[in-house]
Length: 160
Image (cartoon, rainbow, N blue to C red):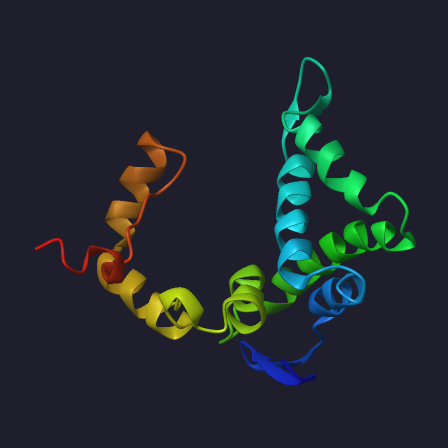
């Protein structure tokens, strides 16, 4: 997506797609879809820790994945991409874009609508969530479970 200004609430926020720039930088030498897949593997490994060993639950997968980049200086771009992802998600929180940076990147640069993979636009997700979710349900759910499980209506198509 091009750089520009997007709305965040009532204030204009400069929109920078540094996350995509980082992945594109790595993809000069490696396949973009492989880079994206490897980024996701390493991000999951970085965010999960076994408190007994102080290592990631996915330490072996991380080491196996990063090994493909061991001879390239581009391997240092992965943590930069991770930091850029977090910052971009925070910048987009509350904006009309939503903060699904990974989904947007996948849809625009990896899938390109192939394989029948399309994603529900963020405003439609907001509408569906507001229809299906009330404050009463939220309060009861938070007390009983630490998460909410939702199934997109499009996933239910053909079930009835």
